Amino acid sequence: MSSAPSWDGKNGIELEHISKSYGAVQALNDLTFEIPVGGRFALLGPNGAGKSTTLKLLIGSLRADTGFIKILGSDPYSRESKANVGYLPEDALPYRMLSVRENMEYIAALRGVDDIRGRTDYLLDELELRQYEKANVGRLSRGNTQKLAIALSIIHSPKVLLLDEPLNYLDIPTQEKVIAMLDRMEGTHLVSTHIMAIANRLTDSVVMISKGMFLWEGTIEELRKKGSPEEPIEKVVARMMTGAA
Amino acid sequence: MLLNLIKFIFRTRFSRPFLVLIAIIIAYQLGISSVVPIQQGNTILGYYGTAIFAFFFAMSLATGGVMVMKSDRDYLFTLPLSPRDLAISIFFSQFIAFGVSIMFMFLYLAPTLSSPLLIIDLAASALAFTSLGIIAPALPTRVRIPLAAVLAGWTLLSLGGFPFTPASAFNGNVYGGTLTLVALAAVTTTAAFRSLEHIELEMMRSLVRSTSTDYKSQMSYAGKSPIGAIYSMNLSSMTLAGRMNMAGTSRYVSRRVKTKTVIAVTSAAAVAYFAFIVLGGPPQPFVAGTNTLPAAIIATVLLTFLSFFFSQSAITNERLWLSLTSLPPPPTSGT
Image 1: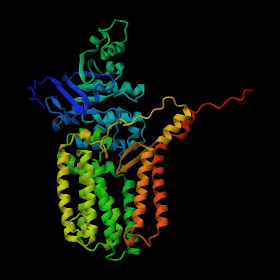
Image 2: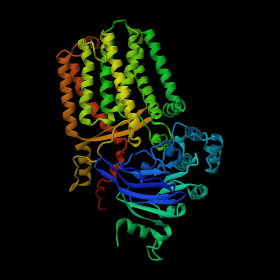
Image 3: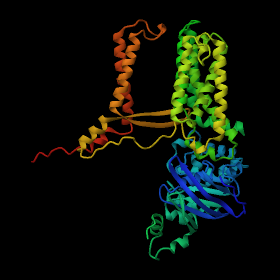
Image 4: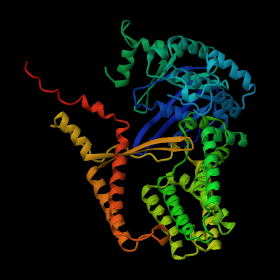
């Protein structure tokens, strides 16, 4: 890892010249981007672009081969950073041997949440999981499992929230509820998604990557302006990702 | 925090029904061993203990891994915990799983244990099995497999009276065996903790290491009719598959192998087994007499069925009748 530059306190997430390989496969190649504190960014990229690897580096599950990463000025592998970050993996699987409430209370306890019962009750009601609080997670529907996964990712009111396809499996009313809830939350959000409509609802800016490399960064409005007025934004994104004229 | 974490990891891996089952099996074993006691000094313990130790040592190293679940990667590893606490907790859960296995293997023989030192042996063995499993993923296959074979071979040397092997305590060398096993457990446990504190969390995938996703030899169905393609797929290769479940951590693994390779390997094993029986067979406590005909039948039937049942596991995920839709339609009667 190269020596990190001084932290200026303005970025929630900062990646500088990150490379990561899995054996012979180069997942990320000199990736650099920044997200300011309080920024709401979507991480866009085609399949295999390196989105999941980027998120795993940000939560400290993987270590970069080269470059440096800072989360609110901390190394993502540090306890300080992990305390600040909330992470929703794609197809998250809460502990199947525990009930909904047990999952929430245990994770809250291990995260050092002050009012564990109060926070659990709030999220049970907010995400309409109250009727399932004693249910074995292994028996939940995929939608309710996703609601629990969202609750677990925000139970400690994180300052930086990393979400991988957060609206998967949710019905439309629940999607709206989750969007409203995330909108009310403070902090820096990075949402990895394939779906432009979701990016548009949850964020206002975009970081686009392809083949492990940085492609483009800007607001969704700027992205829209890259196409003709009648052109769907998805077409613009597809053109940029594939490098088509 | 550490106790809280250990409690959490224990609860997420060992369900209540599983714990009840363990209690029932322990009670059953203790009950049976009191009703039908094995006589002190019976040589069966020596053979039995040595064989189990050799098997566990070899398998821990050859196929071991860190026992984590997807839920751990999704949640546990994202928590602000010290690597040391996390390492201790994961080690603890894996140790319990191995400890239970050891208990199942030896509890029935508990009344025959000739020395209290053997209890230390069993605890040290569980530590060593656990540690070897944790160290295993860091070793390349070309090192891991020969090392596993050497470890098994070293353990088997105790049958010849060598006093310093992990199983020597079962064969009359209690002090030498215990000393060896405790030393081995100390070395491997230290290495396992070092490995756990520095491992990339995301790489703690499962009980098995990740392997290449590419098949070395591709099957070709070009130019084949639908029925020909089905025959080709089902007769030229087999899928050896297994679903492992160890203390709540389940993993489905499968390997495709050529049918002719399976036939060659099982035939060679059958010949070796047959020769083994003819040339003297296993130690006396295990056979009432040596009759070559049953040995030949067992060798053939056992290995045939073994390969057959392994191959069936592929069918459980590929319903046979789904293939029927690709059969050519029946000829029309012309009426």
